[in-house]
Length: 104
Image (cartoon, rainbow, N blue to C red; front, side):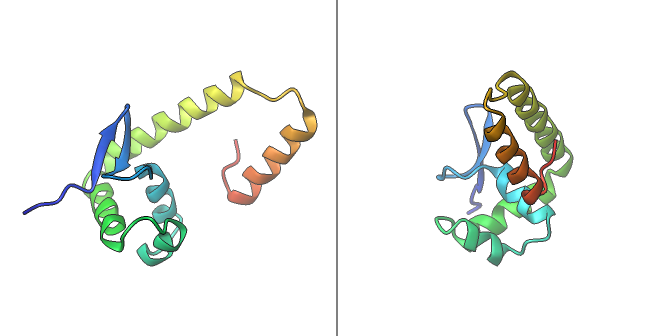
């Protein structure tokens, strides 16, 4: 019996039966994290779920990359539309983004 590890909900991909997005697993995987390391960061997931999500990504790489680009574009649009008026808050947000490697 084949198990589904990824499902579409509300226009986004998630690991089946969880609130963890496929995108969050893909980003960690692309950054070189092992399935075991990803599991440490997402303890509600089993190693099987994580490896299944990685396998899904590898088997659907072109569609997954298109999906990620669309997500990033939507996120950038939301950021532009919702820039905080507080310049100190904006500075702290930019610092966090730089530290996490997700600069605009």
